[in-house]
Image (cartoon, rainbow, N blue to C red; front, side, top):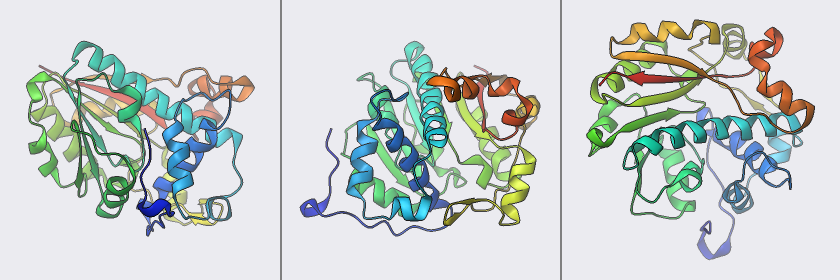
Length: 281
């Protein structure tokens, strides 16, 4: 699959605030994918990074073996959850909220699923400009908090899994609950995968104390420590399943620490907690 750009010229992304963070996740995923022993096979991420006119290292810092592997394993965790769901629902719709320049569709496609990407306008424009068009994949420009995207799932009876990687922490608590409740109401038998950060991390972002080298991390408004994930059930009675998803084993000592981070308090409170929800039939 080839990344497209006009006249082979690099594309300059005009992003700031939360949308600019999609370049940080792309950067780390691509740096991981360049390795011969990468934990995530993602050649499209490398192509995307090479197609952009953006000072990645100057703005985001030198590549970090830890952050790159964490990002690769987090993306892989989502991929595995989607694969499990479409293994039982092969014609399901995957709704990817705020996925930025993720290339999950091409990594998990079984030839039958449908894909709806919901992305803020500037991210949607960049995604549509760079990534190849596909008859089973669509991009909706707009906020995940505008629940009109639920109406664009044409066949919910065939199954729906919603993913929200690196998104929910930037929303307000009421917005998070609204999305969870709407999905539980509209997608019986469906599932959702999301991640969250510990409260102390989100507090630091609201004080402007967390940076990715030259890029300040935007304020995070919603937090949830992994040990409190059962509270998500209170968003709607249709949320009947709540379980932790553990990142797969990675490479070397770092990969082992990432895999077992949920057992180590100091790491557990730093890394994102990934949770899968199940919705009642």
